[in-house]
Amino acid sequence: MDNFDYEVIVVGGGHAGLEACFACAHKGHKTLLISLNFKKIGNMPCNPSIGGSAKGIVVREIDALGGMMGIAADEMYLQMKMLNTGKGPGVRCLRSQQDKLEYPKIMQNFVKNTPNLSFLEGNVVDLIKNNNEVRGVILQDGRRISSKVVILATGTYMEAKIYRGKEVKKEGPDGEKGSYGLSKELEKMGLHIYRLKTGTPPRIEKESIDFSKSSPQFGTDGHYAFSFDTTKFIPLKEQELCYLIYTTPLTHKIILDHLDDTSLYGGLISSVGPRYCPSIESKIVNFKDKERHQLFLEPESRQTSSIYLQGFSTSMAVDIQEKMVKSLPGFENAKILKYAYAIEYDALKTEDYDEALSIKKWDGLYIAGQICGTSGYEEAAALGLIAGINASLKLEGKDPLILKRDEAYIGVMIDDLVTKGTDEPYRLLSSRAEYRLLLRHDNADMRLKEIGYKIGLISEDRYKKFLDKKNHIKNAIELLNTIYIGTKSELNDYLINIGEVPLSCGVLASEIVKRPKVKLDKLMTFIPELNNLNLDKFEIEEVEIMIKYEGYIAKQEKDAQNMHKLEELKLKPDTDYLNMDGLALEARSKLDKIRPSTIGQASRISGVNPSDVSVLILNAKRKKL
Image (cartoon, rainbow, N blue to C red; front, side, top):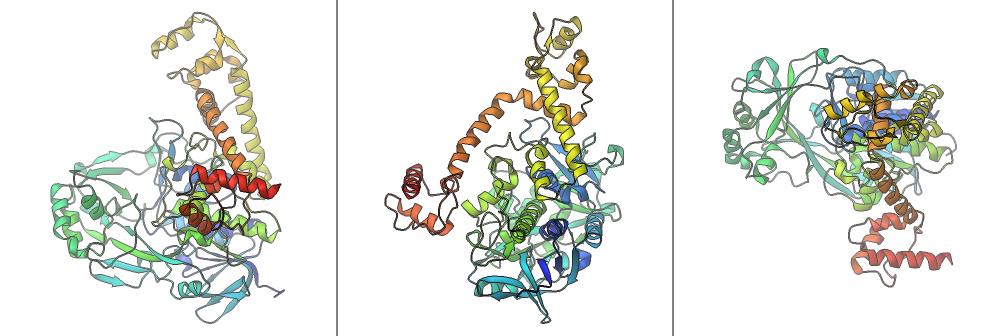
């Protein structure tokens, strides 16, 4: 096949599919996005929020690499909040409450106005195959559309079923039709399909809630954004409020009395749901010692009166949902606009794809998003971006982009998936990153923008702005490390006022910055030379973090370099682990199944011990000799 209809076909218009097709189109490749319904492109069937623990940093990484989620999220948010401000910089992150109606419109507008990108409504039921190559898709109506590369980003639509109590429907999320037929063909191709589950809570009519029984939750004042290039911000006074309430003893009793009425405990659902976003019935069963569970009331749009009941996901029958909701404080007269449900769908086992998100057995086939076994909009978008980048690089005859664990949370996620696997919807957490002080909210551009520029997704203007920021920070750190500050009375007054010991002699400015209670923006009053650099608020923050945590950062960088040495030791794809002398039996089985590309990756596989790693290193050195 020399003549192709498109270079890239992306199947699925969710967050993964969007980033994949934008990446390919922005790099100049003729791309087709196929989705079931154009009006549902960029839809948020669960919580209309973006960001949160670790996830907020991922959105910053997407932006630094040239993705679109952060740009869209900054357009019309309802609330923007910086989380974990009382904790260290390694866990601080943004979370935004999005407008459920506006966010998809923004993304749909991007699709309409992106050069090299076309759209088609349709249901893909099979792939065009040529020996071990995938070269296009086959639609339900029989149409065949050829391409050099296909990216599957099917979300929760593939063989989807909706559960409410004993009621089961073949239906996709948010009342949409699902996608049926493709799973069987993927199985025929030798791929491993398994079922996963997620769910969503009920939506409540705002006017039917008594908010006096809840605690208001405010956004964070200041110019916060996911994109490093955002210049327009919504003032705090114009942002929407969220609210906090707790479940009651009556809520728990109703749920425990009706467990058999849930799809989950009633035996209809056998698949595994996300551990870190469980249903309310799972929380009450698994944490019986907890007297109450917190719930957040979050607006869905400025154009509707719908309130999302965060933390109250359930597969309970609708009549029981009514009782559960009315047992909550302030919900005695609540009107349910949309009932909660659980959704079950097909995904591919992680053993089927590699670090580039390409399917090992089939050339030209990539996957992204929840088909990879993940959960969450942000994880999906990040995987879509990487799949789109690597599909493009393949077309250009270049090596794939593989982000390291010390470079990005995206690298942590993909390495976790292909190395450790997952039997449940994978969710990113800051605790998954061993180098999280390196993977901060503030420095995502410093880590990744150079890569985005070299790939071709960051424009010259954006890159120049980044270089200016980089120079500002470099110059500020150099200045603080060279200039001495004497025992000025005004400075000592400041230090005494914040509970720090006053200076008795001149010291380097950087040594003062390292003091726990000292804030660089306040200290700048006593350093006129620093004011001449015209640092903005976020540059000042980054300089302060880099100086304050210099020792810890250096240690993590050293640990990362040691891991890099293991990553440089490559393992051949055809290595015979089953017959390698010295390996433990479990290690042989795991290595043969996962087939790691480096010894570093092999060392992170559960069941592969340090003694097994030593055997692999020795074997690799022998082969090299």
